[in-house]
Image (spheres, rainbow over the protein chains, first blue to last red):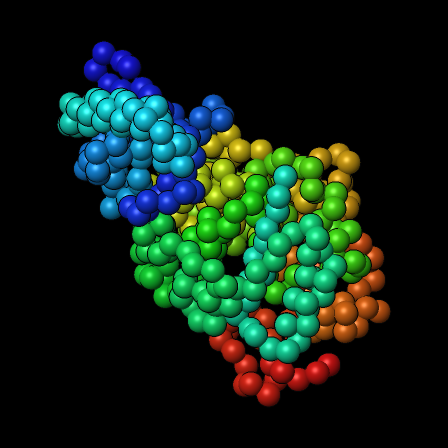
Length: 118
Length: 281
């Protein structure tokens, strides 16, 4: 996390509908831009001024729909464990904790977007 | 690593179906193939499985495709990527119906089974190596993409990683990207840090061990004589129909038009009368 921006990771897929076709990305909000890069490489997939970005939270587990030039991207800031990981009390508690962490990261991300807009 | 593939066609004639059956019979053990039929200029082909709405998955490119009047002329990506991301495999082949192989299909795909490139395609060249490419005038990238990293390709046959199938639609959310997907796909992939290789040929992305193999096509030095893979010449019969017309064994060919009008700005893939599509050679 940077002092005024955001640096973290999220799972991401294009579109606004939930899909299993997600991939991990580096997410950075800094210097008035939103930058997305694959977690697996040092490259850049997207780097756009925040003036062209809109975002709205979705659900309770760290998801957010980011519109870039009116194209939706679905980001999830939770710890990425699937519901199928288990039905026991431990698994349920872990999912609750993951969702809470995801919401906190999402909130920081949204604040960084709001602060960074011109 | 697992592999699936889509056989993409706007023609569903008996000859095209026989071509598809040969592909499946000779490579079905290596690649799980799906027949994808796109009869019109839209981006919603008929597939044997469900896929996400192209207008949602690639919203910006989809709007550009609509302004273009259809997928022809550079927007086939809006039809391909939503379909590809519905498949569960590590690697995803795309093959258009007018690609053919002078040999047993399995022999083409086997050498790539353990290759971990994110993009395997053909005729990859940097902008300065092919400055007269006809699609450069409409090609546009965000300002952070340097011109010396702009790349063109030819995609009737290509293979993508699952990662790249995710990265590309994400990149295209930025409407600063414009132009033919033979430019936007390899250029955005390179910017994303993807591993890009040429399937063969003789270009800057051809690994030394594949130089001169797989196909003969345009290179930075120009078009050699007798190319097998390019925009022209058009061959009228598939390999299984007239093998004697394919003089370079073990190479891929494009385009083969079995009773189908060759692509041009005038024809825009509009179908010929039905009697010509189904005729036997």
